[in-house]
Amino acid sequence: MTMTFQPQDIEVTKVTPTVRGADVRNPKGFYARYGKRALDLALVVPSLPIVVPILLACAFANLIAGNPVFYSQLRLGRGGQVFRIWKLSSMRPDADRVLENLLRADLERAHEWATTQKLKDDPRVTRVGAFLRRTSMDELPQLLNVLKGDMTLLGPRPMMLDQVEIYGPTLDTYLSLRPGISGKWQVSERNDAHFRRRAQIDAEYACELGFLTDLKLVWQTIRTLLRSTGY
Image 1 (cartoon, helix red, strand yellow):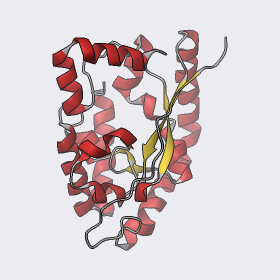
Image 2 (cartoon, rainbow, N blue to C red; image 1 turned 60 degrees about the vertical axis):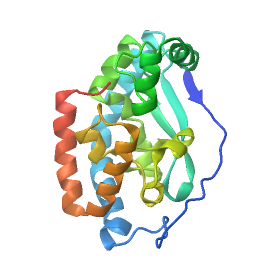
Image 3 (tube, one colour; image 1 turned 90 degrees about the vertical axis):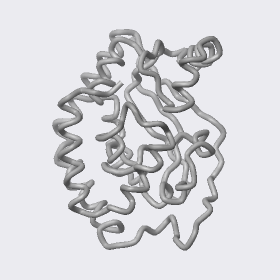
Image 4 (cartoon, rainbow, N blue to C red; image 1 turned 90 degrees about the horizontal axis):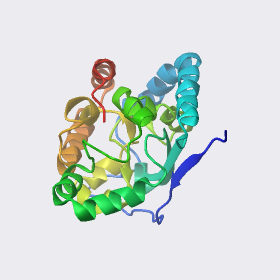
């Protein structure tokens, strides 16, 4: 058996945000600047002895099923910087071609994709991948992104580069924060919100950002994981 990767690269362009009265690279407040990073490290580092064996077991499940093991993609981070995100692969190797053909042939699913950027009944997802998504275990490799500082545990979901035009007028707010593995959108309207609504939720989180807010989101994330509502 060989371990396979499923990269997806699209044209890299640094996004230059239109900022009104704020520097998107420097969030305000002590917690936003220092405390949030300290919370990330305090939660991630002690969890590694538990997370790493789970990650390896999930990777092995993909391997023996003949699926790509990992998936990587370029995403948009704080200040418009582009970084590479990592996930456990949950899709077929030809996922991009399948999606293109599906959206061309099925107008209802094309509308669903245009509004939510997701598909509830997604033919690209493998059997192992469906379990990984339902339990959110496909996101475990992003803890490496958190350790590197590309991401945070709690924040806006990292945006794909081709989603900038549909994100809406709060792009500068998104760019002021590190993208998160979990966050307000992920624990509230994760499966049902239109993409523009997701942008509004990100803006609400930026306004509420603080230690107590993040502690509440940690608890809500644990509750969401136990419910296994991902897809």
